[in-house]
View 1 (cartoon, rainbow, N blue to C red):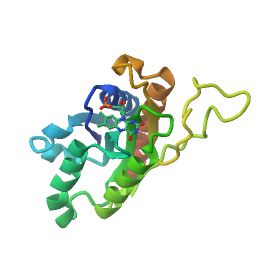
View 2: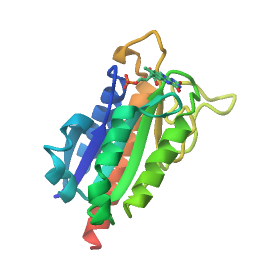
View 3: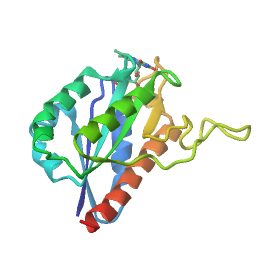
Length: 189
Ligand SMILES: Cc1cc2nc3c(=O)[nH]c(=O)nc-3n(C[C@H](O)[C@H](O)[C@H](O)COP(=O)(O)O)c2cc1C
């Protein structure tokens, strides 16, 4: 089995819904087993991360940055960094914010740099941008036009039920893409 782990933090449930969508997408790929891990479980589930072929990172965008809880996880992982424990695993990321931009890109860049520090191999979304022509719509896949990972925008006055179908589907696509890549990646080892 190809093992996909999704490590996420979610303060108010939006990123959790996206993490579940990423997991659903990854689970559609034959031969993959998927583990959803909240950041406060990583210590107890470190062996799952050790064994994973791919780790997908999820964090809300807080103050233009990954959340403090997610950064705590990043710093916790320095002991794994030191022994190159995650080197050559695939990596990818997703984030949610309230504003259309909200500086989400900064969070995906933080995750990609983090993955590079670990010697991981970053996998982008491989989706053309949606909603950027006169025929486009907010219902399009990748409606926020991100290449580095999956982005979602939720209105600040709505709970997790405000996660749009388009963003849900975009997150699902990322999970599927990473799982497909991981099956090929692990077959070549
Ligand atoms: C402390 C804090 C900081 C935030 N900073 C931003 C921000 O920089 N840009 C933005 O667009 N939204 C920002 N938001 C809104 C969240 O990104 C948004 O509500 C997101 O969906 C929360 O995800 P979660 O429910 O998984 O925590 C912030 C929210 C909080 C609580």
